[in-house]
Length: 135
Image (cartoon, rainbow, N blue to C red; front, side, top):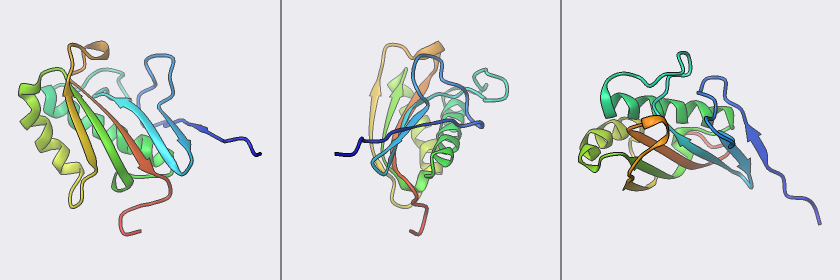
């Protein structure tokens, strides 16, 4: 019996993990990305502009992590969006639609009482490895 392999993904273009977890793990042909928030990797601070700006930055961070893991947004099969305030769902959803055009992945969206460091949105994902748009 061969050992199952898992690989920790390090992404230079994304903020570091803010706790004892990996940004992503690649295993069994999939990339499992931990929740990403709207922190700018260069400054280490949340981007200004509310839930729309934080959603845009979180999705850019997600794209950067996926790229480091040998995947892409086009290969995402499932996301979970955690919102601090469900009243902001339309704003988040409009930005989300900019990143996932055509056939978007499956998604769950839930409101939570609080997110790490006071984030307004947190997005995690599962994606296929080695697949890009058109594959």
